[in-house]
Amino acid sequence: MKITFHGAARTVTGSMHLLEVNGSRLLLDCGLFQGRRNETYEKNRTFPFDVTKIDAVLLSHAHIDHSGNLPNLVKQGYSGPIYCTRATAELTDIMLRDSGHIQERQAENINHHKTKRGETPVEPLYTEADAEQVEPLLKSVKYDEAIPVADGVTATFYDAGHILGSAAISLHLEEKKQKKRLWFSGDIGRLGLPILRDPVLPTDDVDILLMESTYGDKPHRDPEEAYQEMKTVIRKTLDRKGKVIIPAFAVGRTQELVYNLSRMYDEGDLPNVPVYVDSPLAVNASDIFKRHEECYDEEMKALVHSGHPALDFKLLTYITDLEESKALNTRTDPMIIISASGMAEAGRIVYHIRWGIENKRNTIMIVSWQSPETLGRKLAEREKTVKIMGETYRCRAEIATIGGLSAHAGQDFLVKYASAVKGKADAVFLVHGEERGALPLQEKLKENRVKHIYYPAPHSSAEL
Ligand SMILES: [Zn+2]
Ligand SMILES: [Zn+2]
Image (cartoon, rainbow, N blue to C red; front, side, top):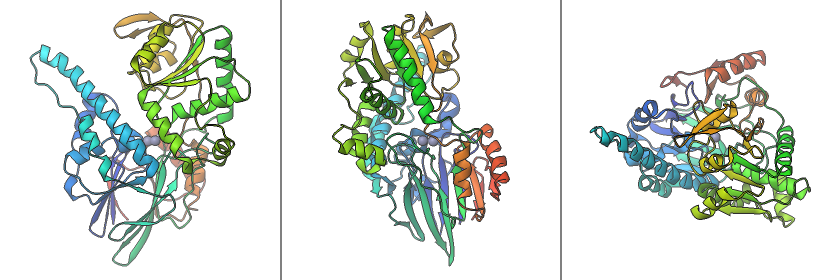
């Protein structure tokens, strides 16, 4: 038995691990490396193994850094099953199509400049049509049900409490009478996140633990504190008749914001102003959230059973139509707009920011981590002017950054997670984390008597 850490090794994106058991070859996740195009294009295009020899893929959740290279895998000849929960299958399908569309647009932009210079055009990593080929291979599985996935390998998906459908995957492995239990955490959620159940902890019979370490350096703030802070900022903005403009990831964060706003209105904390979710992907994702009651926590179930519509309220409008989206720009009445992309690099949010940024009555609310160089990061760092679509704008709107809304576990919960194996594991591999997250976590785990902790390098292997 052997595992090779091909992606999300000493970094956060590109989650992908190859497991070899009993002659079978399984892929845990098939994520996209994200970052500057020049650095990631080749890395994503070329798989470090023979694609046609993979027997099965096990997918932890729909986020692009875990699912985003599946279209490429299929394009290069993979035709086996991709196991995941039903909610993950539905979310993955819409996210991959969207990703294919983005890849095509990016290639078009690059080729526009290349053809002017007489250079050879680039191919998109994959197209929307390529992405559509993944859906027939997605095999949905129920939480907590053991299923055989390859000779000598049984898999069980447990709720990871990170996004809708997210799972940790527990694997029973058997090779030449040797038995091992491997637990792959996927991305670990948090206790008390809205809508979702809390993450299931690994059990003490786990021999090999593969766990994420994104925020291994610090505990998070309490989500309730973040909620209160958000409420204060919104109320202040609406009182001065401004717009609240929120860049948000279409899947996960948008639904969490809608849930929070719905609560604020129900509790009578906000004046009656309209709320718009303006992103076709977010609208599709919200529909999927509404359909998957089996993933809800007790609070969300009780809310829905009391007759309250899930992720909907009277003042909320979901917008897909482009003209309706544009119409918001010229309106000057107070409102709340949630739109994608989450880092304000592309999509409709860019227009909302452009129209709203120079008015000091407005607030641009940053609710997630922002990559360096993105418009979202520049705003969060309170630069006085920013370039949007080639033009310079003064930042006169209030900028509010709300921490503590992360869907990832903080250090304290990661320690609890690893400690659940009670120091009995043969190995704890820290993946999905940069050094600044993983190394402090490693220290903290040692203090808590977790043994045999490794931080594997990209493409390194371990015998199990
Ligand atoms: Zn994730
Ligand atoms: Zn991730």
